[in-house]
Amino acid sequence: QKEVEQNSGPLSVPEGAIASLNCTYSDRGSQSFFWYRQYSGKSPELIMFIYSNGDKEDGRFTAQLNKASQYVSLLIRDSQPSDSATYLCAVLKGGGADGLTFGKGTHLIIQP
Amino acid sequence: GAVVSQHPSWVICKSGTSVKIECRSLDFQATTMFWYRQFPKQSLMLMATSNEGSKATYEQGVEKDKFLINHASLTLSTLTVTSAHPEDSSFYICSARGGRGETQYFGPGTRLLVL
Image 1 (tube, rainbow over the protein chains, first blue to last red):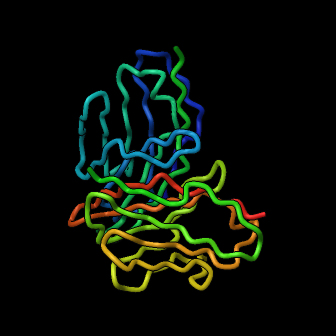
Image 2: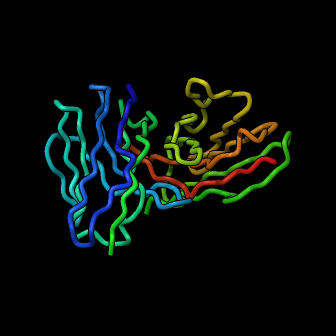
């Protein structure tokens, strides 16, 4: 079983709609969860992170965490064409001294 | 804030040569820096973790004698790919973490092509 799993997509969403990206992880001891956006040929840029069960909102983005189900998601409201990118879910197993374990990413396409 | 730079952004070299990549945290002190590698259509894979003034910790399967990491200061870490071969061609990305925070900020990456 892969440590962090994401549907590779592509996920196609019309402009203005809500994009829903999902991620599951295998290590129950994982503590922190991050969503990064990566444009083609570029390095990842942080969108948001979440530590506690429940929802966390930041502008058009909402991260949702369910540790019991080992599931984390990212919702993007009012999707824009500029949101088209690969979204990487990353998990931090322990403390900040650890590196991140990344999923393969979901390719999101926002259709104008 | 939290800007990380990498140099060079692109490097093309002949097989057998060594390549050094620099990673700098520009506006914060990075207690820990991480080196990742990303092959086409793959995700980022952690290669090693380095703390200032101490030896790097390498992930399983990463040769420490081939990928030399030096973290000489709180703002600079270097990765040297020794005797590079075509299979080392990849996108190398560093990240830095400062203080007590867990968030890692990524550099823009270095694309290495070994001929």
